[in-house]
Picture 1 (tube, one colour):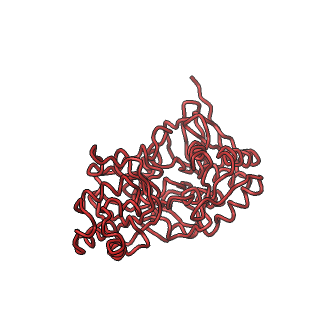
Picture 2 (picture 1 turned 120 degrees about the vertical axis):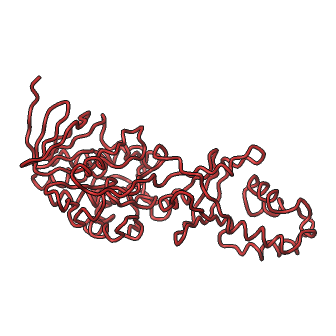
Picture 3 (picture 1 turned 30 degrees about the vertical axis):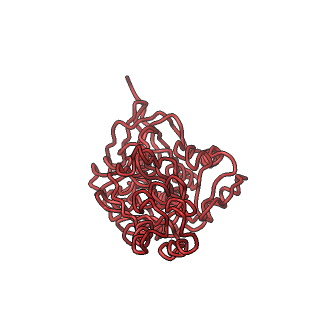
Length: 394
């Protein structure tokens, strides 16, 4: 069977957030752009993000809220295309949005509006979007030759925008990493990020905690996050847990402060003086969810009135509640991870253009690169920013 060969100025592989932004930016500069997607839809992760409302950016984006082997790498792209720039695009398309918490911006309606906006911008630039086009081979001579089951396409510029390994059921693969290695680029070890922990020690039948949620401070080394945590059937989840997971390495202990903003030792002593006849689980239930209070009282305090409990015992229990060390057994893996940490080494790329330093015409953007944002719209902003600067450079 004879297959066709078509020529473009740039081929972008991956029609997610970064790929769409790169394609629309380059095309609106007059470049002829081919956008290849191996699944049957564009923007699949956009559609499911934020509970279907797409947490598309954050009002407080700054470089220190991104994780990378080179923490300064993201600064240039984020400054050249900021959250303000993307908000202006959203507003130009009449998409209503609101701030939820901690600067997180969500669509009032469906995430489909964001995908429709990006597709409309691609259409304005005459981007050639082709779905169900899985790449089978890529070679490079005078140009890049990209082969799919539908034909071969050539271009002097090739953009890797296929994301990371998170959520494989949506088609995530290690394509960008494999291709980068083939072209001699280093890849920083990848790990699931923004992912729940498995903690077998918390999963007990006699004191089931699954479903208990509360505000807490979760710490690991110099990093701390104060948001909700959630006890699950497998261990721990919730925003603060997801945040710290991106910094976690196997066998490291995290620390939970279940009573943030309190001097727990002084609080327990005051309650003993005020209500000496109260049982410890009753005291804790005033401060914590009932099931958690019962479990912690049973584990750390005698089942007797506060008046009978020595001050040092109460102080030790208070210390534990504010410095509870937990060593996760692992994470729930890429299937439940929102992002992938690690990726194509930033030392291989120009921070101004996202171009590979040693492979002319090759670019890498978005989650494929060793740049991972915090929870709350940061990773989408990195997709918009890195896609934009690459689109400008092509």
